[in-house]
Length: 275
View 1 (cartoon, rainbow, N blue to C red):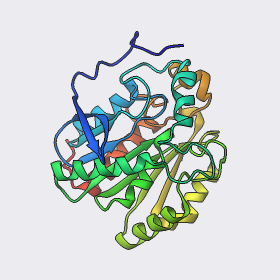
View 2 (cartoon, rainbow, N blue to C red; view 1 turned 135 degrees about the vertical axis):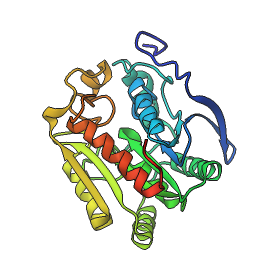
View 3 (spheres, rainbow, N blue to C red; view 1 turned 45 degrees about the vertical axis):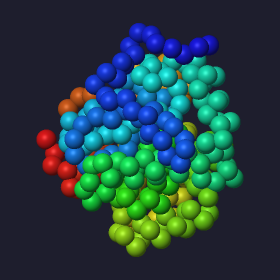
View 4 (cartoon, rainbow, N blue to C red; view 1 turned 60 degrees about the horizontal axis):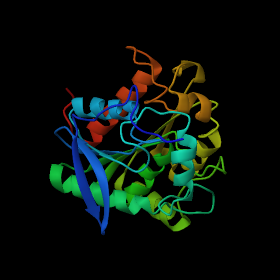
């Protein structure tokens, strides 16, 4: 089943579409906003309208948002058919390490290069890195780049076959833990209770690696949006995407509070003036 433009898709026409080359590898990056830089990585199955909405919220809060295209059709509404056309391809791609024992995904090296570029362009004390689902742990791996000072790990789903595993090699994990301790970094993280893709075991593994620097927050599953797009209803099958597909856009709602906490964390670390 092909995934293309359809009803509910986002044209992303308020973003600047750029071709960014890092170490000879070119990728499309959507950029919007002024202020300190935040690299926002998409969740499966790609830069959905909900991911773009999060990017706009960050932009409107005073950040320059760099949104790289890593898989899927940019702006496409998340349909169940993406399981065969996007997820399975990503799982066998050389850029990603979707299963236990694979170590750190090679794409994180490219993302660290993007963070360096964003910092050079935007200035400030450093860069925020926000991962979602498939890219959730990438935000932690990006902390190997000194420019990254505000990592946010949202419902990390890798490795897919180990609920207590972390998608990072042993050497990189040790280097990240040392850097977090040395520089006094904090790592903010979110998940829903009962999430079969991002379990309590995984959050426990983060805490074992990072200690008190890991701030893992858990929302009640009943607070999740009960009518997410088909991919999240039929493929994900549980409360999962705290600030995107399962967010309920109502003032005071726990998922909106989580979004606001992330923005406040980024503002505190990056020195942005919230609007």
